[in-house]
Amino acid sequence: MKLRWLGTAGFEVEANDQVFLIDPYLSRNPQARPAQNLQPEDISKAGQIFITHGHFDHLCDVPNIMARSTASVYCSEIAASTLVRAGVNSNRINVIKTDGYLADFGGYRAQAFFSRHIKFDLPLIAKRLLRAGTQYRRLSKIIKAYPKGQVLSWRFTINEYTMHHFGSGGSTNKELERLSAFPLDLLLVPLQGHTHICDIAFQYVRVLQPRLVIPIHQDDFYPPVSKTVDIQPFVKQVREHCPGTEVRIMAVNETITL
Image 1 (tube, helix red, strand yellow):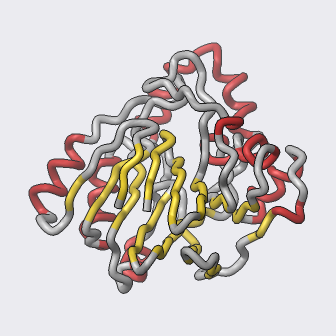
Image 2: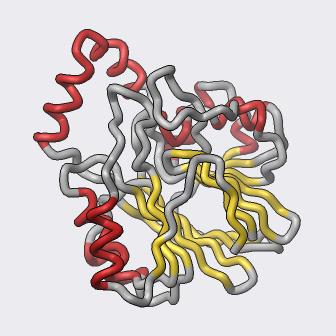
């Protein structure tokens, strides 16, 4: 299996001669760091696209990617409505309405679980509003055009190798405990959206106990809405308290083989 991080929560996965995407967001503004040199038209091989929720930094490039591929998309009802308004044929959209939905694609299996978005805390909101300044009205229009909808997390099983992807860090302890019943090889955990996000992400690792964890969504993907997150406190906690879990930090567009 080959795994390429596209920045934010986005991934391209190649497994058993199949390619699928997770939250493929490539658009950036000039201030974004690190820069993303790929464009939606550079992604054309995907068979399936899996979406965790409808926010712009997870969904907005999907119509352009689908226009250049034969991919079908799997997402919530709200995200599906956003895609239809953007011109995507509804016949190519699979709406996830059931917690635990499972699909078998031959070379891999994908299972969706209902999850939650992280709640932005007041100190973080205040800092982002201050940074946005006069750009607030323009940025708020972009945000409002992409409502969240039901949040999903996705578990992929490839040759018995299990990988779990979260697009946002709002999971309850009950949700994580439920998912911990399944052995986990790789956890893709987001670090964005809260002042104490490193502590929040560490709880995912503590409960799910993956063999490998890759932190994602820590990049400054769309300033001033976003900001680079210092993930070292997270890395330190995992290495000190979860000796059975390896931490791997990827660069944008880096590909690793698992």
